Image 1 (cartoon, rainbow over the protein chains, first blue to last red):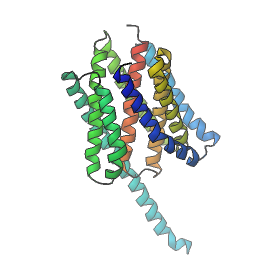
Image 2 (image 1 turned 90 degrees about the vertical axis):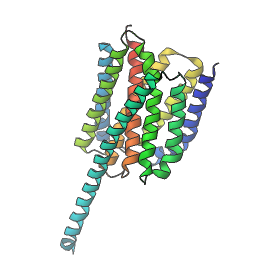
Image 3 (image 1 turned 45 degrees about the horizontal axis):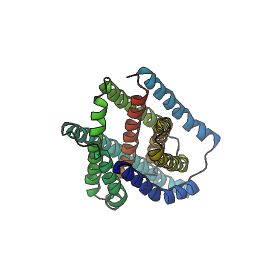
Length: 59
Length: 224
């Protein structure tokens, strides 16, 4: 295994160590979404998926 | 009594709107300049033919600045210098990646498509968040949980090297970063983020990750 892979793995582990406590905190303290909120967020994200698919088809 | 309080409430609400507009204006101004600066450092890195390990070194440096230096300087003028250091470093890291793609027969087309695609995604999502004025703060927990899962999958894929998993990871990162654009923009509009330096770094990282992962997706999926 080359050292680039080792350093990449170290970088990801560091990110996980940094993010995990914050993630737990954010999951616990995020406001709850209503059905309308979820739809309002899902529609643009679905459009992004469609747009990326179009870009893939164009190249 | 409540009638007497109305001018005060009105003044407070006007001042809150002005504050939000100021943060928004400063964020977009700083974001534009840092994107240009990043493009300049990427160009320099390409011309100098920086080695292949540069993206890794740049990411280590940028994360060090984001985690250790930015929180201490974000409320001062020094924070602007730190933002330029972060975006400049990430731009330097982009150089070898772009040089790799330019070696492909349709490399320049892939880079321009990714750049244009990233711009369209950012403008459309920011426009949507700005005009709808919805509060997307509920997405924060889901998005961070998504990042954690992606990091675990990426860690596993360093050792397993499954191309389909790389593709899936890139696609999911684009989706998560798109979610972050909605989340971060709505936080600015709804007064949840009053520091334009932190807001700029958040939006810049979303744009950077969408660009790099879109480029990777297009590179793998293109016919050449």
